[in-house]
Image 1 (cartoon, helix red, strand yellow):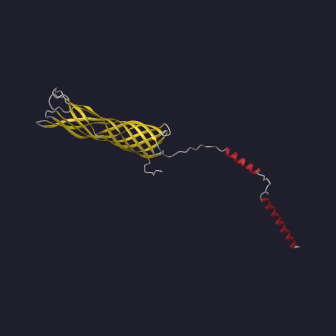
Image 2 (cartoon, rainbow, N blue to C red):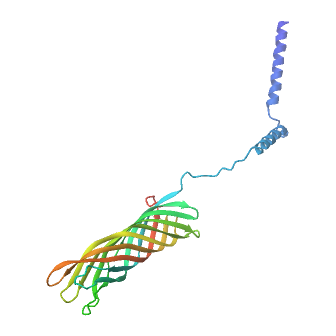
Image 3 (cartoon, one colour):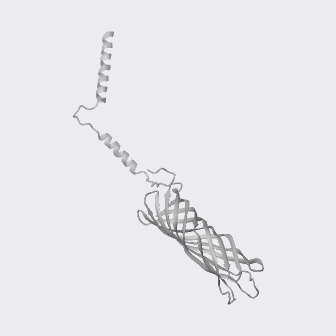
Length: 285
């Protein structure tokens, strides 16, 4: 009796397990499954998501994009050296002064290094620039009230011209590759000035010194971007160095004495061709 009961219980447990496994197995091949409950669950999830508040998130860079660059510069400087002032009179009742200007076209070259910041429709460039200018020479005059002498010419030379400027330029894109820019800078500039005069009556005036003063420039131009790292720049600048003075020495048959300063100021209209290279120390691909 006890053995029969044990067999009956074991049979009942085996039958229950078989029914549970049958419910867990997938439907036979070809028999459609009932996914209505899963569809209802997905619809409920979508409805819940649609009710959530939507917040727009914009990408914000913590700092403006910026790139280092170097520039090579060459061009023509339509230079003007203007003289003016009243030296100390050598003789009583004579008002002697130098006047006139030297005008010539000289070669200028140099370079710049700076950082370009991304801005709407272009760039903001901050840079340091250094340039040199070739020899400028010509004549100015000494005005006298002596009808015998008249206006006597000075031989003037301005050599080793230089400038060191801090510039700010604003670039604007007007196409995929074409752009315009404008700006300017301040700094210092100078040259080695020499002036000499001979009256042909045994009287001479000579002087030479290094002249340096405050300088500024302003201008603009057109740019063409060949690649993301290489840009060609054709620009115009007006450049000016403030007034400087050079002591003169007067010599005649009798004595040698100071004659007072020869004053001068340098200005130039300049056409410049520049090649700008961004990230110059990165390998070219």
